[in-house]
Image (spheres, rainbow, N blue to C red):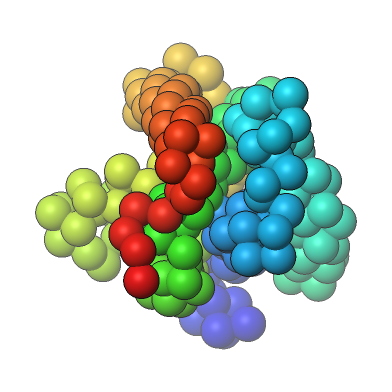
Length: 228
């Protein structure tokens, strides 16, 4: 409503898009990344270790479940936002779908990587979530564009923020939804490539970290990095 009052109707669409994506970001932090740590506290993680299924496969299943569980609320935000505020859209839908899928894949791969970190460090997980949620939301462009010409941040902050999958995903979604950019646009293709690389790298890192913790648990009886 503030954007509309100042005649910035396109920014209204940015805000609605941010409301959609922050639902998934919250799910990544508070469900995906923290799930194994919570399971460890109630004694379920030992069952995962002794099961024949690889732990990474369990995490992939949790990721898909998290996406499906979050999708209805995210869709409701999008539908109500567009129905009430009618922001202008100039979408290239094949590019929108591709960007959205790659963003979710890399974002949940980040959640998988964080899950191994939280699993190892235990009680600090909730504190890390509290510390990450709002700052990452701010610099990743959920509330307003954080990269490019509309960004209020200096280039150094923009460069650092671009290491977060959500930042690149938000910028690419704005390009495809509101500015009519499709495949073949240099910056969009670059962001798609970066998202794909991030997703693969984070999946590899999470798989190796979880394998290390699994072997450590079977060998020493604990997966904690440090004892209290």
